Length: 291
Image 1 (cartoon, rainbow, N blue to C red):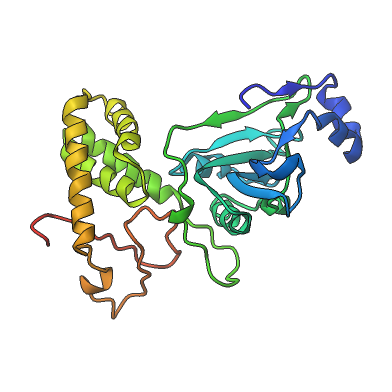
Image 2 (cartoon, rainbow, N blue to C red; image 1 turned 30 degrees about the vertical axis):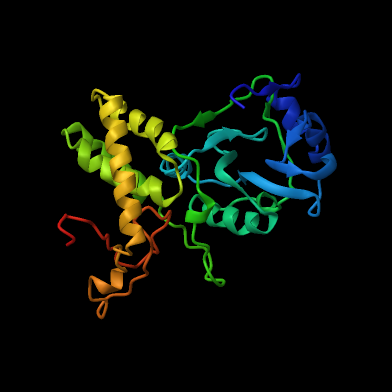
């Protein structure tokens, strides 16, 4: 993905061709992003999907920044018909923490896509094949990826009903991550670990899977990573979270605050990847002593 296939034709030649001729040149093989039975691609033969593949042919100036604010792993690259700065076209790949069944693909893909812009409808077809990246011989190619946890499909709440496009501002999550890192810079490692471990335990990551992610956040913050100390603290926190969950100590938001005068929607934790527009966002914290 990082290095595209460069065509023998330059941009001037490529863009004078008809759509069929362009597609023929673009066909250097491709992928589905999932498991296929007997190597045959159809709605009936797709067993699972493990990557969301989203094409965006009409993007605004804020598109790339919205992708960068995603709180999970992404891979962003330009497509063959990308002609900056007037006609920018991109593909966003989102690997999943675990594979999903075919019926879950389209709703999940739409939920993520609407946070970024208007994706091509083919992006939501479970059996859609995507070409490997190609570019004219003199064309510009844009590639970018990040280091973040894979998207856990079970954390995404699918919108109910047809309410029209309401892009969830995923950049809120990125801001939370930056606040966490700033806290680590001030030496608040224990507070940061509580936040991270709570998140990881809730979405099913094991202690072994959480450790390298926590290591990266701490080292990115310019702090010394003490593996033995951190491993012990992670084990203690995981055990504490699991004991509290078993005792049902995590109270619903409605038992803690009065919602009589606000329109609110209760979610588990604060890292759900969208916050409905026009609603007050309330975060349930834990200042200690069971408060």
